[in-house]
Length: 201
Image 1: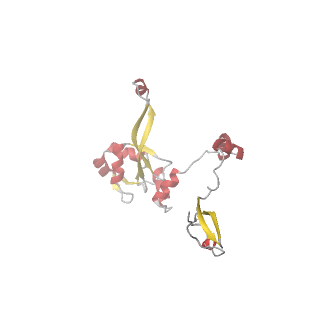
Image 2: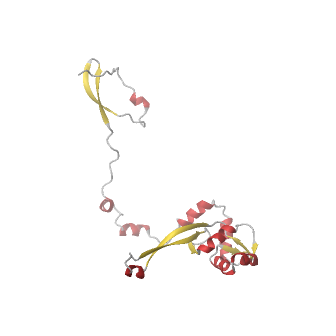
Image 3: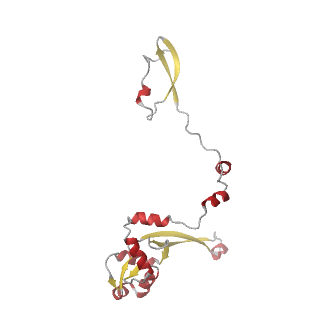
């Protein structure tokens, strides 16, 4: 039998937490974490957990060249190769294998690998959007206000600084807004002659 790796696979080290009664009885929190490896492959239905010892095998095999099963068994062990074949990360050269057919269909689509992984991770089904909004009480303006409060103001008041100016012969203290880069340059040009001078107290 000839075998090769699937076209695209991304390995993720993930911390998985679970409840352990023994830890709770021993004075702990009862929540115990462990590090696990997950494989993301676009031709699969979702991420799958794999043994840590199997991760280097996926990194040692390529998605193009076919290799004899006996060679892989001798190099990595029959149990490891069988486990990766069983989850569709290694594929046999057999038209009847469902994972091989799915991988072949994926190869024919020409996906960019990172984009394919992102698309796979974002897939969902069985979700009723309108019902979920009703359940969360965010389907109306009133519900949005109850859940999230009033929206923030559209913009903050600009900072202002005071200057003394002499404009057309009159001394006055004026409040001048700070310059805003987004404002068009034409609006910053004064429409009348104005000469600034420091005040003498």
